[in-house]
Length: 536
Image (cartoon, rainbow, N blue to C red):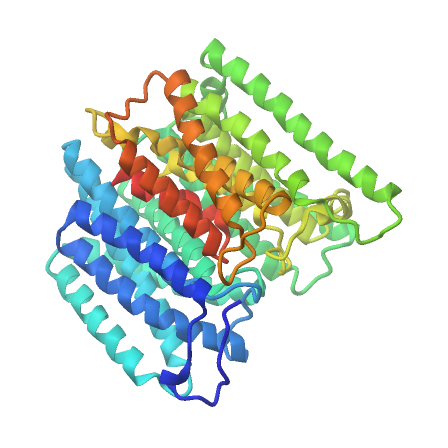
């Protein structure tokens, strides 16, 4: 939590805590690094956006502290507006540069649209914060207005009419998703996490609608991800609205839930996917999964790891049952078992068959979200059992009605695989540090965050100012990631770093510092920042 002065003080009397300033310094270091690597008008827009987001973040913090925010946000963290605001714009910038290097003009323009969309969504969130702050923060409004004017002017002269309409469509979807999901799911997000998650969902939904209407050709793997994500979100909105008017815990409601899930899956999702890929989705998926012998071995190996994860959950709950304390919680080291299992899952997939990993992660995301619906709505026969089993692994970040940390872990590991346009990964455009981009989630979360948490909680003594994180945990995290990079070089012959060791070390160190100071969901934020730095 940020340290706040009394609300009666004037705007200039508020002081930011040291941890928030340190987090902001790390984010500004990333922004300036990308700006130095790109150095064009869009990177200047990113710098302007970062400056205004820094000022507006404090207004969000003050609103949260005073309880004056429009929705109920997660209270165990600051607003996180600055780090969340910069993810999509920076991602779009580095995507544009890599696709320009690969000679792919379509995805180069796509990167510009991603950057513009991220800036538009961040500016909207800033306007929302300033509009409900009392008294009106005059200085911050002036800075935000100036930065917003610069961004809008540059984008007006950079985007075509169709691209402007696309940005506005995403913004409109984002506004409605905010009103719906933040009302239905109080205390599940900070403002920054809502910006990051709902902004991403809005962009995916708009891309799916656009591709469905234009009948564009593409890789079925990409369409599969789009349809699955949008289908699961729409399913959640539908059932959340429905169960406002009826009890979800009865057998009648549970049967209706399963029947409607089949209707939505077989009657909406599968026909939608069939329209996009022009093939039977189920036959395509089966042929894809069992196309080679390597894929069969990988699927068997992953099934074994999934079984191990389930056994860990059952074993820990058995220990809780035998414990005298009813408030028994799994220790940090036990929760990190799942990080090790995920690392063991992703590394073979990245090395041997990335398309299979792409699809398998998508299927796993759908399963995780579906099981969370079953748990949240108490759907029989598994709803109450899942509530009991998963309650052991809750921490302070799961303060809302949803349990999202395991879904964030899956997203953090998968986003580096999902977000890189495959046509831009050809022609040597992902050489050097960029060759580690698919491993960004493994390094940042699977190795870095896990080692920092274990060593910091067991051996750490010197704490970073204003946080619970320790210097020893951060240093061992950096060291473990460096060792992991060396092992990747040994086992993955496709990785050639081209002597870009200084940039890799700087990227890993910067993201490790962000892990030490941020109060946002690190499983989601850290892989994205490492991905951005490695892509640059």
